[in-house]
Structure formats: C-alpha cells, structure tokens
Image (cartoon, rainbow, N blue to C red; front, top):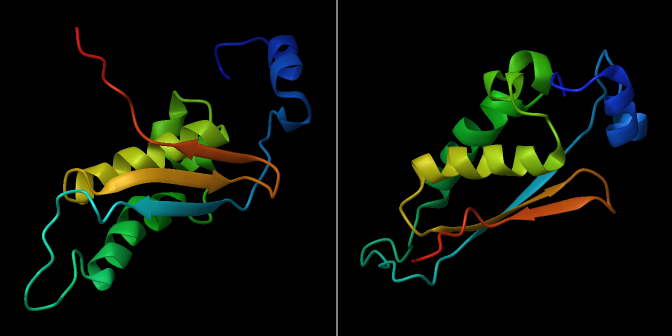
Length: 127
C-alpha cells in the first residue's frame, strides 16, 4: 500500500510485501443467478446466451487482468491495494456493468487452493 511505510507494509502483508511486486495465477468462478425473476427466452430456451456471457467475461476480466501486473497495468489498482479481496470487487463491478440487473450472484476468486475470497456485492441497509 502506497499509504503505508515499508515497515507497516511488511508487518501487514508479510511475504507478499515486495516493492517490485509478486505474482499470482488467480482462478475466478462466477455464480450467475438464473433463478431471479429472469425470463427464459421462448426461442432460445436460455436466460442468457453463453456466447454473450463469455464475451462479457472476456471484457470484464480477461482483457483488463490477464497477464498484467495489477499494480502497474490496471488503473483501478493505482489507488486500491491489489489484494484478492479487491480483485474480487473489481471483477464484480466490471461484470455488474455488463450483465442484466440481478443476474450476478457472487464472484469467487482463488489465489491458492487454500486462499479463496467470495464477494456478493455491497449490501444496502434500509433505514
């Protein structure tokens, strides 16, 4: 984090703290909710064409993130620490812009087999 000292970064991020960055091969899993009051198209029999979904995933995830140094190549992470949690939020926000409202249920990002983040968007509280 640019807002922390070298000592604070080391204490907070441990072995992941490296001034020159470090890499991960993330796996992202998306759960698209097809049960939320969405209409099945009478002609195709689908809620969403999987070819369209693949294009949305390409635009929202692959183009901005694949084979990139998140801190250097992705403008979003210039001000946001590139933790797995924030990668999940980035993916969610990008997909939300492309998918029909209410379709995206959760984003699950695997940093490792043991390090997994699940993000379901921001909850709004009434009152």
